[in-house]
Length: 150
Image (cartoon, rainbow, N blue to C red; front, top):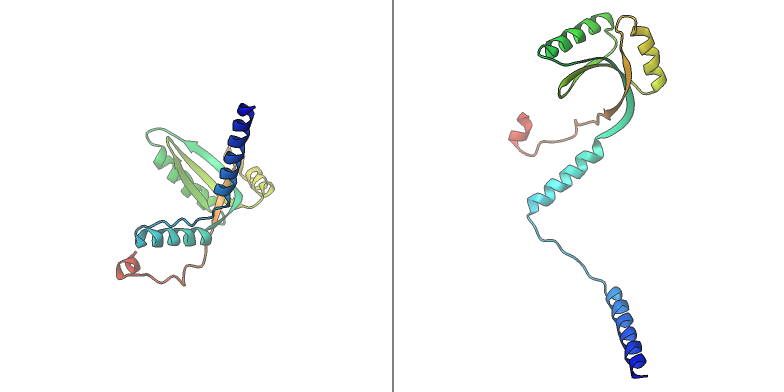
């Protein structure tokens, strides 16, 4: 009998303690350097301005080896002469230089373009890509003279 009484009393006390602890509401204040808070605010503001959209590019070549950098730039120049209306990009992902073309918003458009160039550039493939939507940065005022020189 006393065991049951002690056990029941302990259970009641624990449940009362848990409910009391959950009922307390507090406020957490983090004290730190004001400059860190300002940097975090600027970082959040910048990320809100820099938006991205999904898209596709046609990979013309993936080159590796001792002379791959020069080959990639030569291929870019040759492609740009043949298709001046299409943007060409060189992406370095160790150990490869990848030459990619186009800024397509749909996979179908990228495939149509790939079909157009595949005879001249065999081995082309369509790759997913993420494009930044460039915000209007003209209204950003530099904070210091040093920032204005960048």
